[in-house]
Each structure stands twice: as structure tokens, then as C-alpha cells.
Image (cartoon, rainbow, N blue to C red; front, side, top):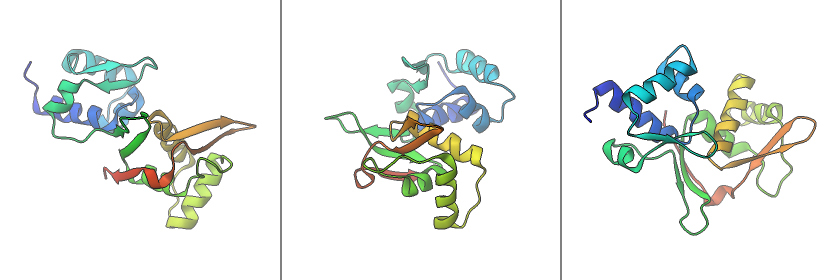
Amino acid sequence: MTLSDEATERLADVVELQPTKNSELQDRWGLESGSEVHQYLENELGDYYFRDDNSLIRATSEAADLVDVEPGVESDPDDGTPSKIRVPELQARIVDVLAGPEEESESVVSVLHKLRDAYDVDPDSEDVRSGLQSLRRKGVVEIEYRTVPTFRLAVERDELEVTTTD
């Protein structure tokens, strides 16, 4: 199956963002809805992606070989924990300020304030929440449900290599 330039670029996005959801691809590709993403995946990239047990979108190994993009997550072969991630700059900053595995988990608002203090930026709280959820899907962040959902790193910061895609 020969892919168009657009399909190859979008396949590279799937490889880079995996594991991902329709909504992340919708934002990246500028589409109107998650169903448009689903239709595109099925019609153009059907041989190169699959959904895992959690319905997250992942690229096949053939897809990763086809595009010259590093996968979004690389895991330690011994225990499967993430050892290297490629994420947008905001998510890299979240990893930098988020509570560690042995610390008390923190709310989205707490992470937002830490980002403001550390980087003199003012991201939207929904962008921070989305970034935390994306990192959770990658296995880097864990969630603890208290009065509100709270987050902390699932791996030691010094055992994780973070590069940005921006």
C-alpha cells in the first residue's frame, strides 16, 4: 500500500504520539471531530495502526519502520516502564515540575501554579489537564483520586529521558 505525502505525515504523528486518542490526532490534524479521525485512520492508515486493550491508538511496527520518526514512548525492556518519551514542550515542563513517585500527588491547579513559577508561562488549565492525561497514557504519570484527581510521576525523574517535539 503506497501512502500519499499527507498520509505519511499523519502516520508519523501516530507513531510519535502513541499511545494516543482521537482527540489528540484531531487537534494535531485540524479536523472537526473524532469521527473524522476514525474515518481517516480506517480509510488511509488501516494497515498501519491498531487499538490496544484500552482503545488507545498505536502504530504497528511496520508503520514505525515506514516513517522516520522516533516513537513517542520507549520502555525499559526489563520491566516495561517508560525510559524515554518525546512530548510537546508543555508536557516536558509538566514532567519537570510534577511531584515525584514518592511525593504527595497534586491537582491540576497546583501543577499550573508550579509551571507559572518555574517557567513564567500561563498555560490554560485545560491544556495542563490534557497534558497530564497524555502523560498518564504514556505510563509516566499516575493518577490518584481524592476530592479531585491528583497526579504524580510514576517513574523516577532521573530514570526518564524527555525530549520535545516542538
